[in-house]
Image (cartoon, rainbow, N blue to C red; front, side, top):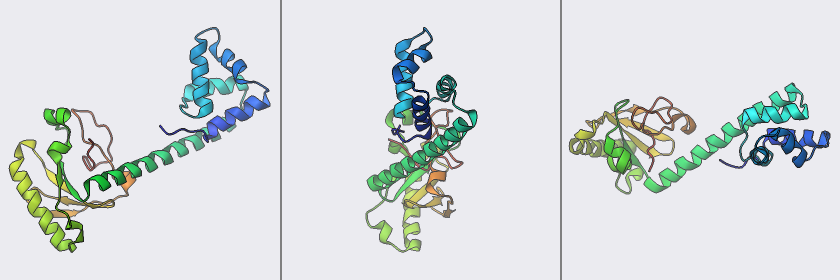
Length: 219
């Protein structure tokens, strides 16, 4: 995870350490309480550097420093907002990298809860990703969707064993169409990129989703 040196929680703890005139060594020893001193110092350093901020440990630190509850509550809320913003930005970067690598493409959608065992071994792109001809993004929308429909129909005829229920045609980073296995355009999906990202299910476990499964694959 991205370093959180600017985390409001880290800043709050450093502020109160200075206010209480308590250095790292003293605070770490108090946190160990006769237990695992090395672990206590490691976790304290993670919080102070912002590399890992665990809520239960932060509460322990703040109790020792006698940080007012209301200040911790405000800092923690700001910290959660910051983490969410970083996650959204990270997803946007990952999506852009995916588009740069694949270009416009089709992605096969599997029935909910179904995942061929070979996908786990070989990877979903081997089964679900259909790369499209160069220049397709330059076509008028009607011609583009017609061409993609033909490709989807032919692909489905060759890959029925995957039990695909439809395809998603990602024309650009923010424009995605649903395509039936017969090649018919079923409309454009809605929602911002950060709302629609999902990862293919593996077995019965849903790694990440927002109601549209397999919008993005992963290598």
